[in-house]
Image (cartoon, rainbow, N blue to C red; front, side, top):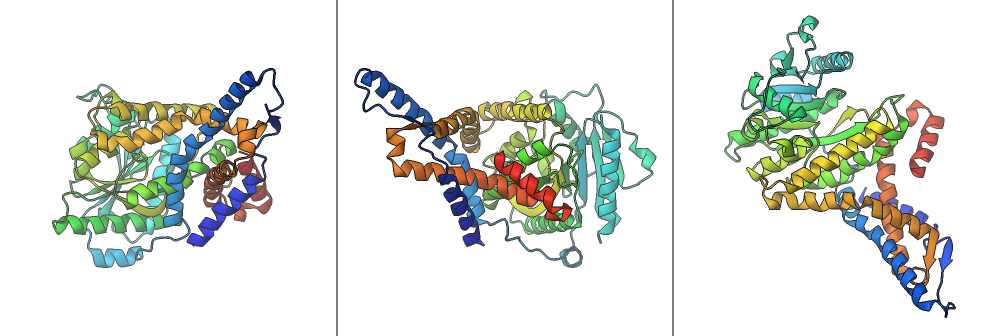
Length: 434
């Protein structure tokens, strides 16, 4: 499997080398004796811009390592849910907590029904699971007449002591009013999140393993777990363009996030969904960390938790969500993430050693415009230096291949030819263009 993964990178790198990275338009200065000084300066400037392409290498190689060492095709095997329930004797309960602003009540209700339906299909006794909905606006979920469903309404006048806002405010309030005990586990979901029986099997195995370690005195808290989030796994996603753009997020889960969880460190934070966390950890860490911990509250929480001694683990399962419904929502989402991560990186309340990798990766994200400019310059303008430097051509081809592979990998895990080969091929073609 590792050879197949390496082969995929090599093939994509070779394919990208067919693009003339020496440029469609040649910039030569050997015969320009009148303006040789000007030409030399211009060529140097162009070559510097071209080298900005390598600013993307840390983030790309981070994911590359994950794909090579922990191949996405090689799944971690755990016992069946029936076997785990019979042998583990898990004492804790599982609280599947959906967090929402409450502005899409029909969507929330539908996903609550889906969640309870899936959980009732499992062999878990009903005392061992609950579905909670932490909401800013009333949803009247008691009208569903389901004893397994609880609505955790955040009062409109509730103010976090340290000034936490937005989702962090709702999460902090939910920790205080939930019936979950310290030994219980909370599985965080967004309002559009869905899961299946296979997901529950892996979550249960993680919780049972961590509970055993805690009971044996091997650690104070169980590891926080997280897995892969897949987007647009529907016959008709709400927006194909944003869904294709989110393919890279699936590859990042298998790459960057897999690497950090395998070494039990939240090097670059964590997602806000598909978080499997012990209630004791949430009570100790909390979500009230002022405005710095209110934009990307997930990353802030992860770094603070690690500073307190909590470790993290990989859960080799899938959660299913939707990409933003339109381009503007997509742009606003990324803008919010970037601004929130900058606040996390600048927060002196978190030890520097916990922030340093996230700072580096956020900086890599900040220079994406330069990388894009370098890519365009590489393609359009050739110089004598880039044309006669094989190492440069090979390096740019390999990095371009790794970048392409990330999107293709995410595509393969998102879309299926079962929904029609013509649709599948057209979407793959669109993915390659993007």
